[in-house]
Image 1 (cartoon, rainbow, N blue to C red):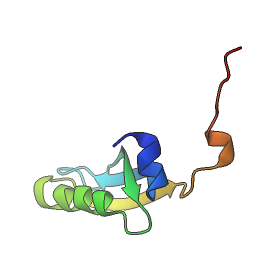
Image 2 (image 1 turned 180 degrees about the vertical axis):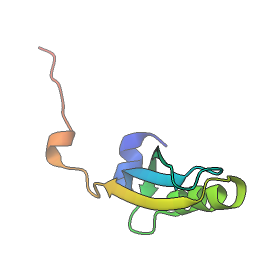
Image 3 (image 1 turned 120 degrees about the vertical axis):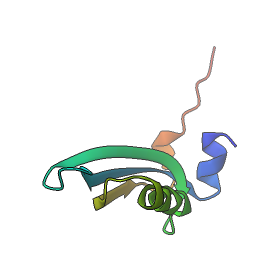
Length: 83
């Protein structure tokens, strides 16, 4: 499904900043940026990714910050006319 169709069916571009502790040095915090189209407010794809992280990766999660816009705004859709 293309981006516009996803947005019109309730998906929005979600950016998550994931802070996690280094596996061997828990006092050091690293950052990872995750970005994907997901449905708000449940964010099933993000939860699926975080579950995968928790089960398969050694760096324990510290903090997750989510940013998204829910609706398509009129200024985001542009039509160009060729004369």
